[in-house]
Amino acid sequence: MNKKPKKSLNPYLRFTSVAFQMGGTIWLGNMLGEWLDNKYQTTYLENTITLLAVFTAMYLVISQVLKISKDND
View 1 (cartoon, rainbow, N blue to C red):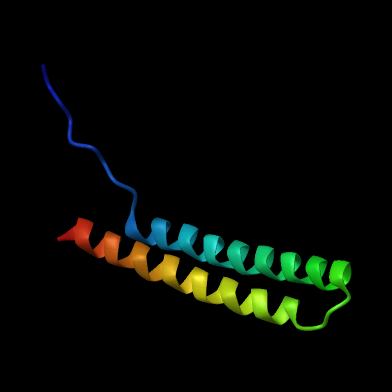
View 2: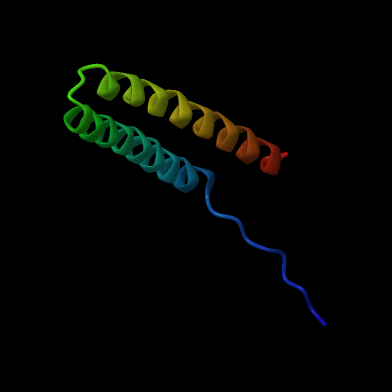
């Protein structure tokens, strides 16, 4: 039985998907904050949730970059 080694994606292609994931996370956070501001008649939820989405996206990017660098070693 021949087992072929699993071919991984090009790291640059993986970084491109990370960029789209980061943009989507921030955009969804902004949309959620805007919706909550309109629903509860506030002015601070959009900024707060967008900032939390930025931190979440940064965490996801850093963890994926560390995983990619570990896979390449």
